[in-house]
Image 1 (cartoon, one colour):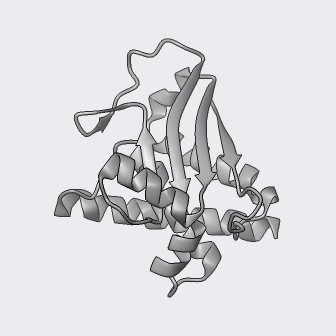
Image 2: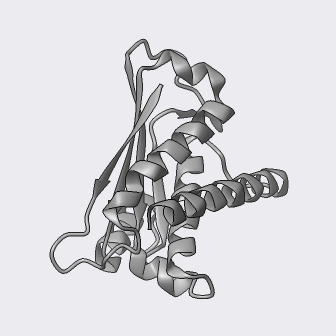
Length: 167
């Protein structure tokens, strides 16, 4: 199984990502390893796709309003394709390609909400957070929150290590 990461943005006038383009391939390998570790049977798919979009605050606010009925920008939103009753459930898919869904990250809000962290670390945190939501991880109970935060921190650390390796 190979994870393919599609990254959109920033466009003209959009905030710049703190992540250089050269790091995205390394990020894909980290997330591929995490996916294989969390769901060993994912190997039956030849390719798993993940889409990441970097959005301006006004665009993120619009998406957040439309899908979560919150009229404010946010740092990260995830749109999973295979969540069923709080679990990752792509079992019925009989294709060589498995799209996981979309992670939307707003660099401006990430900086504003996580300004106590270095930019790169905050960005890696949002990518890890959004990725786990695509896999039906959630923080809706204390137990699930604790498990998610622990795994999220581990993924964030691996993403940061990968970033250091390409800088």
